[in-house]
Image (cartoon, rainbow, N blue to C red):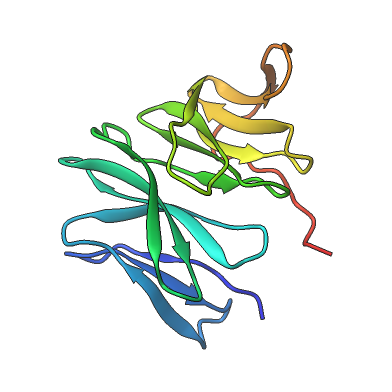
Amino acid sequence: MARWLPIDGSSPTSKLVLTDPDFTFEDTVYTSEPHREIYGGAWSRDGTEVAFFEGSYESGATLKILNLSTGEDRPLCSFSSMGNPPRRVSWAGASDRLVFDINGTMYLLDGLSSPGTPTPLGPGFGPAWSPDDTQIVYDTRAGVYVKTLYGSEPDLSIGGQYYSDWRRDPPQ
């Protein structure tokens, strides 16, 4: 069964909901604290966890991991202000690494077993991993770029604008 992860932003709480493509099955797996919204939503490579942001403009945002079998969530890192809400969280296909954006800056969080300090990657939003997890594609107001994460190559402009993504083959 294909699973979708829509976010229900109804007030005063926001919800992560598991559903199938025709919405015949629906299960709320997480409800935010009052007056906080959920942003992002990225599946782990094995489909057992979801990474997402929970936050508000007044109190900032926290990146969390939700274990779908236990319902337990754990915070990974927090940002005390949220001028621009996160647009995307992207989970690497072959490792425990996340890229995400908040406040117009992209970050890399390497190793998710415990909370940590994310590494800033520079300005941009909407980062998404390449199929081999060595690059990310991201947006700026000037266009779409590709960043090689482990090397000294400059970011490559590939034109276009807004909400780029990389196609991933389903797990074998």
